[in-house]
Every structure is written in structure tokens, then in C-alpha cells.
Length: 328
Image 1 (cartoon, rainbow, N blue to C red):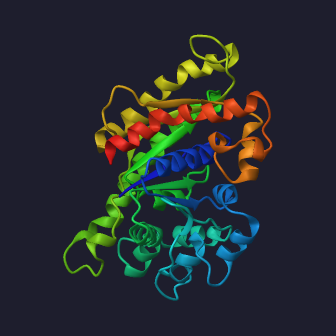
Image 2: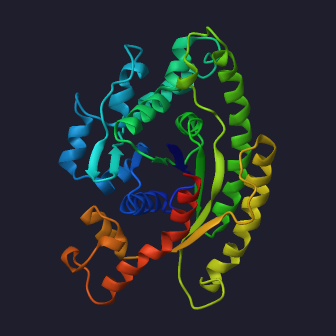
Image 3: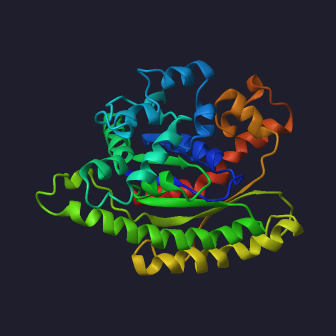
């Protein structure tokens, strides 16, 4: 089982839509996939579930990401062993929860003492331990984790338990600048995780080595999204291509080169995992139907050329599907 986070500290880059689509495509390919919504905005959960199912996951006996780690967050017990929500064959979801902000506060409070106090390190690894349990229960081969657009304590702890991360980017000035913040923060987090995990990896520390994350996710690559299509070499409008042509250089300088000394990249020639254009009005139909764009049809309200455009959108994600299959 591999864990992959979809992460960028900039919002509005389409990361949730991207995750939802590759998860569905992996499930279509008979690869059991678990989605985990660790963004307190819960956009992934709203994409996959209707309101009644979401309310159920937030109930006292629910299986939202906060409900399952709530006892640890409150210092009242261990994680709750509740199974993920089955969406269909080979596809599962751990629903998000707006109360996850409460847990993020606890993560910040216990980070400094996590290297010396067992209770503090258990707060830090609660989500990692639960995801391992949930993945084993549904026999997931791939876990895809949706994270909010920030560099806070929650993302630090979740990324510390991942094997890889993928960064969706818009071809704009803000995304390019954001790669610098990403690279610098991963270097800091690596050192902090090393410090906090060092003691607990020793024999008789009181924490099982199987319960500890690695704290060193590898950069699998990036995908450019939300650009407008034109019949040109770049496939973008002139305006979008101005920044689109700068993205790869920024990624290599600010992320790949920063993570190279830490062993957190795969030293490959091409880190671009695909270009996903702006699908415009197709996405609202997809959201309303709780299904990926490529599975939407006339029964979901599509008309005319939108039907074939929706069906053909499946090919946009083939590069990342091939990449994930290659590392399984």
C-alpha cells in the first residue's frame, strides 16, 4: 500500500477534482483505492457523498476523519477502529470533517514535546495509524489524501506519513512563487520529523516502530491545471503560456533541487504528470452527480458536444495513472 498526498499551499488549483478523478480511474482499473479527506473544507467529501451521508459520518458513531481520531485529540483514548465508507467496488472514502481544526490546534500544542512525551507523539501519528488501519480493512493498494492549501500543523503531520506527494499547479505567478515556499518548508519539516521520531525508533521506547511514519515523502511530480485551451504548441492561450513555460523551471529549482539532498525525489527526467485544462461547465455537472466528468452523460444534464467532451476527458489523466501503476 502506498500513500500519496495531493498538496499545494495555494488554493484554487483543482487538487480535489484531480484527486477524485484519478481515484475513480484507479478503481476502474481494479486497483483498490482509498480516498482520505484531510481538508477541513470537506470539498472531496461533498464531491463523493450526499448531505445525508455526510451528516451520518459526523454523528457520534460516524467515521469522519475527526471522529476516528477524536479520543486521541482530546486525550481520552485511542483511535476508533471504524471502517471507511464504501462508494463502490474498489473505491472507498474516509469523509472529511470541519472539526478537524480542533485536532490541528492539538497538533500545534504537542509538536514541541513530541520527541520526549509518548502522549504527544501519539497525537502526531494518530491520522497515520488510522489510515493504515482503514487501508488494511478495505485492502487498499493506493491511498490518496486531499490536503488543504496551507503549510500548517495538520498538513505537516499528514505529509509525514505519506510515501509520495503530487503538486497541482495553475500556470500563474502565484503558483510559481508558491513552489519556493513548498521546497523550503519540506526541508524544515524533514529536520523536525527526524528530531521527533529519533527517540521512538529505539528499542523499548514504548512506541512500536510500525506505528511511526517515515517523515520523508518523495516528490512524485506536478500537474498543471485550469489553463484555457488553444491550438498552439503549449496548448494554452498566450496569456497562460507566459507563466506555463516557467512552471517546470520553478519546480525543479524550488522543489526537486531542495529535496535532492534529503532523498525525497525520484531523480527522473520528467516531473510533469499531465496538463488538465479548464473543463468549465462540465465540473458543476460532475459535482451534482457525485461522479467524475468522464462518467457524466445526458442523464446528468449534459447535451450535445458536452457529452463527447466529458467522455474524452478520461484521457487527460492517463499519465498519472501510468505513473502510479509503475510504483505499485
